[in-house]
Image (cartoon, rainbow, N blue to C red; front, side):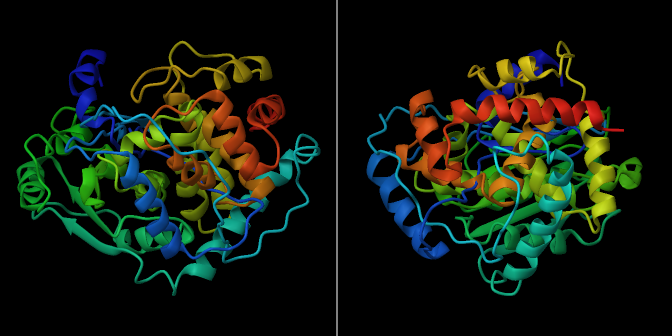
Length: 422
């Protein structure tokens, strides 16, 4: 997408997220850590109540992601809201349970030497989490998968992919309803009409439909997703372009990636712009897309071999203009960059590579869904900016060490992984 176009629609997109071969998305992170177990329903109700105490809902969501024509993720902005309420909550431990017990020999002290074990540990534990939650999660989210009247899908298991995503994140807040629209260029008017039928529709919301169609003339091959304002409903759009049928990322991982953007925003349901909530984290550059990509690739791969193949392809096929140094020092500097806006290069787009491998490493230490714990804890601050000091506390609550302590370790792991990818 041209820079001028991104700027023009940034206000609309900062709340939603998208992904796919290139995609614009929104992301937040999960928790694993020292905590007692609390049911997902209780957690959702408690968080929503706390959030509504400190925020005034507005009607303009923010979207952040969209997939592009290449096999790399790109983002486009959607309605953005400006938070005016000052955060009043202090982050505390939020009990989170994992359906599938997670035990790993990998720790922060040995992860550099055990880094080649990371993909196996993460893929196996991700599949176990889906399997453990699958039946019980069937009623968690009302899922609607809609396809344009002139659109022929090249992937017919869309609903199954979304169900896997719902099961994967079953221990965390999720939107009560998720609507997924798939359409080709010809069916853009249909998609717009579907947006206008939504009971929470406001003028301009349908601009999310155009975002996936800005990479190739007269084609739609991007994607985005998020939660729209105070409705709490997640909406995702996926552009259908026949040449993409050969890309394994489009056959499940993309759908799971996009749905994850809605989960990232779910802890802020009750705020005016849930999508903006997760974007207020100072580490949003690596966390947003990194978390969504981890879920998409790990859950959407049918075998460890397939995961390793798509992992390599996704990391290698997302070059970022102006960023060519993947040394530990450069990655550490990237971690410290808090000036991150969806759609901005290189910071935001590095989430698909550095961010993804960072979340993968954390998932090997504390569990495949652990990163979402960062989101649920950050939500206790409302939608205000989370300071570096606060994020250190949040990170330590989830992972046992501060973000400042973890950064150099993770930077070394990611740098070595880049070197070793065949």
